[in-house]
Amino acid sequence: MAEEKEKKKEAKVKKPSALKRNLQSEKKRLQNRSYRATVLTSIRGLDAALEKKDSPESIKTKLSALYQLMDKGVKRGVFKPGKAARTKSRLSARCAKSA
Image (cartoon, rainbow, N blue to C red; front, side, top):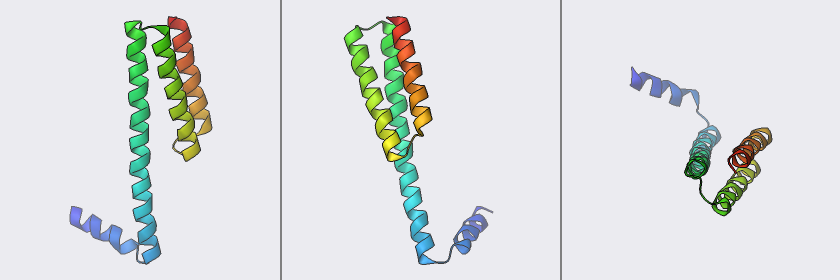
């Protein structure tokens, strides 16, 4: 069953340019996924710092690093601008609330 699906996928794409495009898009998908994981890990780190009630300086540095990651993600096309703005706004509100 699984072998038939693989054959069908390969049979649909015949031209070398299409095969190359598939390889490129798969590589980019994995890079974007890795970048999103990095951002989520950073968000979890900020949440942990807020729960532990770390010093305001450390929270500010983590928030700043997150802003950089989100902006870089928008620039690369990993995130849409609205999602980045919404995420940054919610995180800064959370930080302000805890301070």
